[in-house]
Length: 232
Image 1 (cartoon, rainbow, N blue to C red):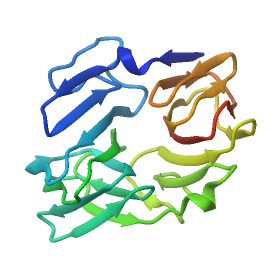
Image 2: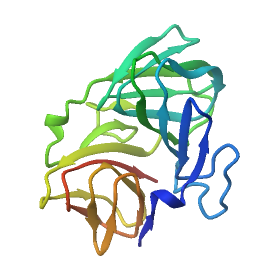
Image 3: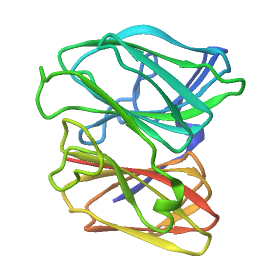
Image 4: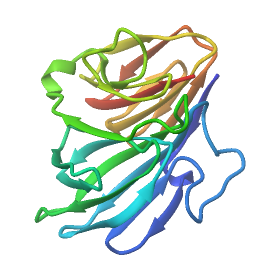
C-alpha cells in the first residue's frame, strides 16, 4: 500500500511565532485515521520565527528526532545538555523516565524543521540527548541512516525503538531504493522537490505512508531531499 497524504490535508496551527503542520493527530488536531503509523507517532512540519521558540517543557517515554531543514535550533535540557543543530543535521532526545527541554531559534531568520516522535520499545529507560552533522554530500543518491535503534546501525544516533530515520538527496531523473520488510511501516516526506513512489506522485512536504513492500523505490521528478522513517 502506498497512500499519499497531501500537505494541504494535514492538521495545522499557526501561533504567529510557530506555523505547525501535523502529519498525525497532535495537540488540538485529531484525526482517528491518522493517530500513528506503526511506532511512528508524530511528524510535525514546523516553521519557527527568528528569536522565538519552545520554552522549557517536559517529555517522557518518547524518542524525539529533530531534522533541521533550514536555519538552526538551539537545545537546552534538564540533563545539562546544550547544542545548536544546523540545517541538514539531526538531534535525538530519548525522553525515557522524564526530561525538561527548550528549543529556541536564536537565528535572524526562520528555522524550518521536521520533528519526529517514535514510541520506544520499553518505557522507563534512562533519558539522553545527542546531535551530529550529516553532510548532504554524503547522502547524494543514497539513503543514509541518521538515527536508529536497530542492530548494525552503530554509525547513527541511537534511539530506543525498533525504527530507523534516514535521509537522501536525489537529482532529478534518478532513483534511490531502500530495502525494507513487508510487515513494517514506512513514512516518506520530501523536504524539497517532487517525487514518485510506485504510481504515486508527491510534492514537497506531502506525506507518503507505505506498508506491504519489500523495497521502496523513489524517483526524483525534481531535485529532492528525502526523509524516511522505517518503523515496526
